[in-house]
Length: 206
Length: 355
Image (cartoon, rainbow over all chains, first blue to last red; front, side, top):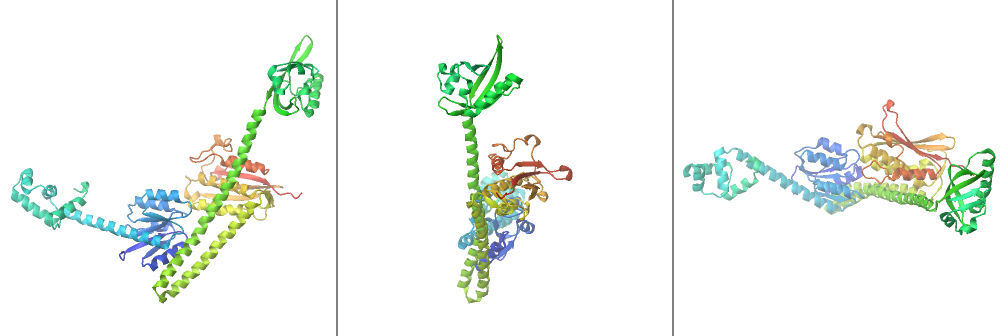
C-alpha cells in the first residue's frame, strides 16, 4: 500500500510513547520518522514528504494544534492523525475543523491506529497521484496554440467539426487538422479521454 | 418614630414602630425606652443619656447606629436607630427613628453562605482537576505499555528471530509500569491531604501536588515555572485543598496574563518566605499584562473579570479562603524600572502555634 518514500511522521514529546509507536509501526512494516517536538518537526518538514503525520495534540512548546495551523499555511498535504488525551475533545474538534484526518484517544487500540494510519497514507498517495496527473495534463495543455485550445473547448462540448468550422470561421479541413493536433498534444487516446482530461483543468488554467 | 423625655420615658410612639416590637400602642407610653432593649444595651443606654446631659458628649445623638432591639416576646433583632434632639418650653426631648435590619441581615448571611458554598464547589472542582491531571499523566505510560505489548504480540507471530526485540519491549513495559506507579504514589499523598480537612502541615507539602497540575498549563503555554518553596518553613494549620485552590488559581491567572507576552519572557515564579515572626508569605510573580491601575480595587470582588471566559469568582473565593485562615490576599505591580513588567499576587498564612 505504501511506497518506499512513504512514512509515518511521529511527533510526540513523550520518549516512551514516541519510541513505542516507532516499534509498533515497524512490526507492520511502516517506516517511521520520529520528532520530539513540534518545532523539531517543523524545522525539518519538507513539502515533498509522503505518508501521514501522527501528532500529539498536547506538547510543551509549539502545540499540536499550532503545528497543524503552520502546516496548513505551508500548504501541507500530509494527512494528520492527532493523538489526544483525557479531556482534549474540544481541541480535537478544533483540529478536525482545520482538516485533520482523524484523532485517536490515548490509550488506543494498536489496530485502530495502524488502520487509520494506513488509510491516511493511501489517501495521501492517491491525492499525490491526482496532483501529478493534473500537472501532466496541464503541461500538455500549455503546449497548445490559442487556436487549438479554442478547438479543444468546442470539441469537448460535443460540437461537430462542421459547427466548429462555422463558429471559428475556418474550413472544416482546418478544424480536422487542429483537432488531430489537440489529440496528439494532449496524449488523448479517445474523445472520452480528452473530455476526462479537460475536466481536470480548472477555469484558471484555461 | 418614638419620642422620649430627658429621663428616657416614652411619650409618643407611632404605629409602625409599635408593630415592630409586638406591643399595643398604649402599653408603651410611660415606660422607659430601655424596655425595648436587651439587658446588655440597657445599662449602656442609661450611661449615654446621663453622660450626654452632663457633658454634651454625643454617642448616638445626631448619628446613626446599629443596635440590638428586643421585642415584647423577648426575642432580639438588629435595628438601626437615628436620634435627634428637640428642646421646647425648657424641656429636652429625643426623637428616635428605628429601622428593622432583619431582612438586610438575612441577605448578608445568605451572601456569606453562598460564598462558602462556592468555596466548597471549588474544592470539588480542584479534586476533579487533580483526577484529570492524574488521568493525563497515567495515559502516557499506559499508551506506551499498550503499544509495546501490541508490538510484542505481532513480533512473536512473525517468528523466533525477533526474540531480542520482544525482550526490549518487555523491559520498556516493565519501566513504564513503574512510571505509572510513581504517578499513583504522588496522587495518594494528595488524596490523603484531602481527607484531613484541616491540620498541621507545611506549605511545601501543601503546594507540591499543585506543581504538576500547574505544569500542565505552563508547558502547554510555553512558560517556565520556577518553584521556590523552602521545605524548612515553620508548620501551618490549614485546609490543604483550599490553600491548593488558592495557589492554583493565582498560577492560572498568571498564565492567562501572559498570553500576549513574548515567549522568551514567559516566566512564573512561585516562592515562599517568612515575612514576620509568625507569618509566611507565598508569592506568584508573572510577566504578564499587569493589573489596570483603575481596577486594582475591584479585582477581588465577586463577578469582576477581565477575561473573555471567566466568572470572576476566582480571586473572590481566594480572598474568602485566605481570610478564613487568618491571612491576607493582595498584589503589587512589579518594578518597571527594573524592566520587570507584570504583577505579583501574594497571600499570607500565620504559622502554626502549639497551644
